[in-house]
Image (cartoon, rainbow, N blue to C red; front, top):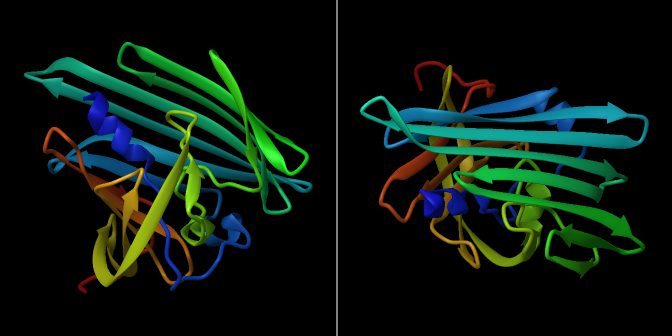
Length: 223
């Protein structure tokens, strides 16, 4: 199952949608997804937004629990907290429990870059960079991301694949699909015309299909 979770880090690049100005205006206080594996809900992903003065705080939580014959065989728990000031990521704190494996790292802005601290290493990232937390559509303009499951910088390339009608909890919406390649592979992501993240799909190495289906997106009935 570990290889299945690695694919959750994928992030996207493109050009045909609006940039994020204020995520609270786009999403409200949160965005929620069901995590679906081979047609069955196995977890959820929730990202919450809070603005205090000039600091935007973004918390993301995701869990997966897989059972076979009613017995638990795999559990994954992901939590991250981002702080943003003037459209720049100034800090990131990540904790991952991936079965028996545990990862934690922090990143703090120093001058014009970030310093990443992990248990066994420390390194600097020059310039601005976005994380693989999906909600910020501006990542589509970039060619690298900070992988929040590993603490590594990944080089990426995203290819737009056109508009599609996708299912959300209360209907359907039209969104732009993007496929990516590079260090992160085999996944597709959808954003709507306003730049909201509305869907994620990838094929895990075990052959299962993982979908994020939005619970808080407003769809139209009967499309």
